[in-house]
Length: 202
Image 1 (cartoon, rainbow, N blue to C red):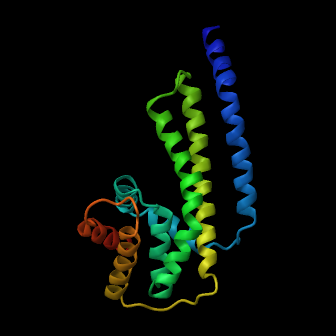
Image 2 (spheres, rainbow, N blue to C red):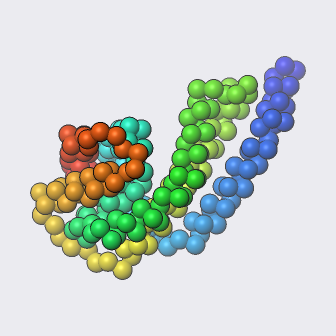
């Protein structure tokens, strides 16, 4: 009986939020359906992010410099595909991603992290399941962001770049993005950025 009342409490207090999440999930799927089916950027990101050390190093920049990880990985992908990232493309990419990332991706991440440490009076298991739903929607939101970024270079051809030059170009593109963040404090951590570039190109 006690468990039933707890579950009912979860539905009563969390139902509205769950409904909002369900609507957002549906809208994200509709947005995804309008994106190109062949998303080479997404496939590349999934493969790279699974490499040992990549996620950890990306998340450091996310947590310590408030960096947009999908945008960072887009920069890396452009360099591997096109050989360089010009200032115009970087500006267009930031413009395309900033509002979506700030107003959609980041709030979802904040909600997920909050529920990991505080279930807000909800029973632990229903709160955990709800948090997993948020995580899934957050991932879909990042995929929509990456698909939009990929459309910026869908007409660009591929080029072969010397491995050393590739690392230097990737470092330069990431450094320009990170240095341009309005809320960055202090000097760029070149060692950490070099480690990330080396790991991606390992």
